[in-house]
Image (cartoon, rainbow, N blue to C red; front, side):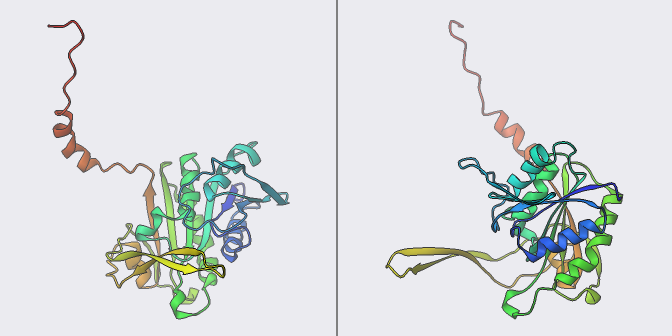
Length: 268
């Protein structure tokens, strides 16, 4: 384990508290830890690449860099440029400020950092710390800091297929209140409404905030939301291949039959 080369990234930016926690988790496993993270917050960036503007890189120290791009850019820069002499053995993405569960995973830059590592064939784990901003209490970073090292170590020792990434969420409670760890499926938020908040700046020009209005939902047992609701750490394997094989098999005979090859020119 001590010989592992670990890449740490995130979507909350190089100065975030969660990145410090993820770095500490990585250092509990290995001395060969690299931190390559976005210069500024990239929450909601999903699996996006920066293609129309150049990337800038700021070296903070020998194994710590800030990139003016997305988490995907950071992992790509790490594997193909900064760490090209030896690729990472593990990617840790996080620890995110807030959960990445249920439908959130499709928006998440934290998930995307692990997703890019997975796409490059590197075992990758996304880490997120749940908190409820409406309750106005401090984020329980100590929950992820306390339970993260043993859980990450066990996951790496156990292993998983290369086309799968691990999504870990820590519950919103002190570490001593954690009720256990549960391997669960991705959940679903039944009610979620996008909100566009239109405001005016001091010069009379409009600007907009995008957000979500989330109604109460049933946290079903056996899902990430269900585990978190009873103060358990959720571990969810996510696959890169999004094909729905049942629908494919049902659709294939009907749609394939629609196509009729055009007659070749000159044929009767």
